[in-house]
Image (cartoon, rainbow, N blue to C red; front, side, top):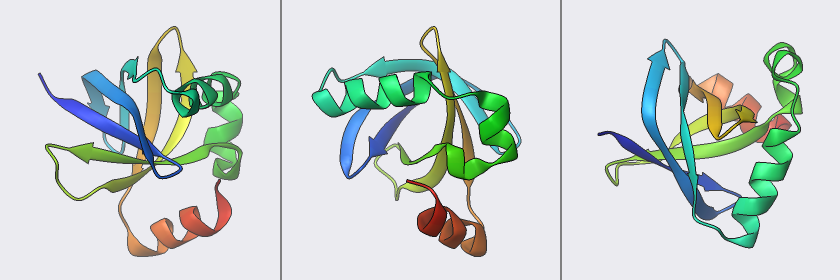
Length: 104
């Protein structure tokens, strides 16, 4: 079973398991580490309107995903609904720069 660690605001906050990939998008079960920051992340992403975030990514939040202790990859958290986390991976240099400069 593939597990991705999720880092937000400089701290590991949980994991994404049972992954369903679709091009740049990933969906999977969210498993929180139970920290205060994990809880804040859940509340924030759980309040997102996924269509609004996909149309205007600055309405989402920036995360890093880490696979097998490899170098973190940038991603956009789009929604969290019933423990199902939906994200978009970002890999192109200009897109990463935009993400860093425009998304919290």
